[in-house]
Image (cartoon, rainbow, N blue to C red; front, side):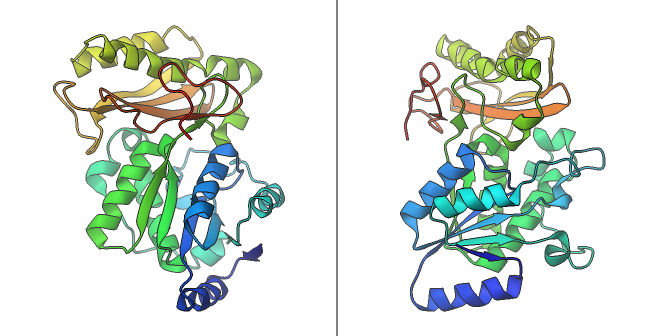
Length: 303
């Protein structure tokens, strides 16, 4: 595996490979990798000749009171994991490489980016869309891979690609979970032992949403209220977003007649946990993968 920090050197190397007809897949990350990231890498390896993984903790997507300075970082550990997984190129640039001067050009999808997580993290998704667009321009992959745990992010990136005619196919990969159902996330390392035990209320709330909808509940406002009450059983969990939205557009719905996404943004201690599930569909939307144990009720292991 070759490691690049220079944009120009990476571009030059990839240009030569593309001229040979090699396909390139990109996995954008902020590092501190876990099995969820490695599932993205595995998918990229299966579908491309060359796999590029980027590691960049992007300051544009952090608010002034958020955890940029303490976001977990361990480049040596990450590089070892990627090397063992057969990644070809690691692109690990610093802020000075990615943003050598203050950014004046910003990519945004405001109607989608102000919803849900964006309502409590203003400007977050403009930062995400901007850095992803820049990575697409640097790497010029045919395909790029994103985890469905960040459901809103996937919807926004797909819309950005469609609206701007970016020649990249965006692949969403099912959420990977621990044995108790908690979605794997780099931020889980922030949780104390008590908070980690409490955090299981988040996937349990998604189970409850699925149960209620399967039982005939069709009023989204009632579902949101019941899920908020369910979350309140755990005193360490403070819900910031409990929302039922159209699974394709993220717009509010008046009835659960088509598949909807149940989106949760929950603070456990000082850590914000993000999770979601598509419900109201006969198929398993997203098909959560479980690491180290049984599948969640009604889900199983699909990958």
